[in-house]
Length: 406
Ligand code: NIG
Ligand code: FE
Image (cartoon, rainbow, N blue to C red; front, top):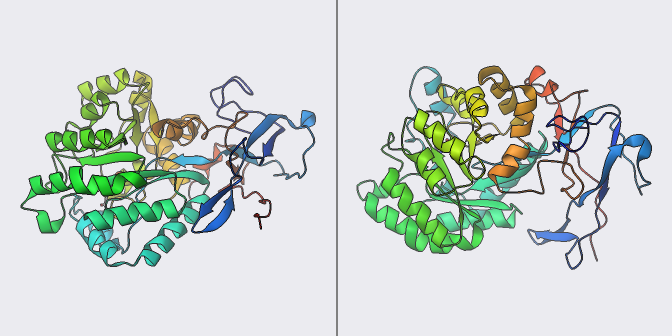
């Protein structure tokens, strides 16, 4: 059992216990409901960890599940994903593999398909993607808007995410300037920071921006600052897409504004690394190696960042353009093979790291009180996540829920 709680187990940061047991309790906290309403249906809350230790010492429980020697880890926390979109950009991917660079221009294709989709289609697509993630071990996922880019379509995306029970919802109206306003950028920034933000804020926890002066479609430092300040004013916490396509102000802006996370970090200067080291207790650098894989960009040097003292997380960025993979195990394998992370560091980055990037203390570990989110590996050790790359060994544990109330 990997608890990701260093005070448990073998004294390593992973907190590993051999021959372990976890007792999970589904009793709700005083005053809370044991059920959440999702799409009008009561869904049992997953409960929390009530006890963890050696199996021989485990207290009695109503029901026991044996995983027969398999490794159990905290459910993965995917802190960066774009799951509300329709359409497909497989041809764009194929062209990139023969040398076509990525510049964000293809986002307009997904915007057109998403605007044309019905609410029902978008909700079905979202739920299918969340289930696809669960089947690969992910139990918490952040979901962004950003393929609507009108007041109505952005608010619709976030409303649907709430209906699907997504807790970590992010307003990304400032993904790119939509085609119809290409020559009127300032007008679009005013729309995002005004009526669009007002319509979206009730459904969003986070505000985000694609800060990338290297792309004509995305936002420069001044525009990004305006968007982030408006989001903060509206009560949203901040995250930033920064330094994906080239050097730019995204990383330093995120650190200055105390964003929870700055994501991509593909091109970093020495000053960017210094800023991330200084902000380590506040701002996490979320690396997305599936994007480097799918865009043929250079992988960021995670080894150097960790050695310098930067807080690092890993996430999929699952989206139709730069990484249409929902697989955290794939990300772990890339991080170990291409970015110099150890298997232990990579596992910590998709559990505790993801939780830190979302400012969550209840997920990403299995100490008493944590959410009952467990992922079972069909393997004896977490090392197999990268050792057996491409083999579907990770699955979120589905606990038999109590019957819903009448
Ligand atoms: O995080 N870079 C900006 N946004 C997404 C890609 C969106 C797309 O190409 O559809 C990302 O990589
Ligand atoms: Fe992204």
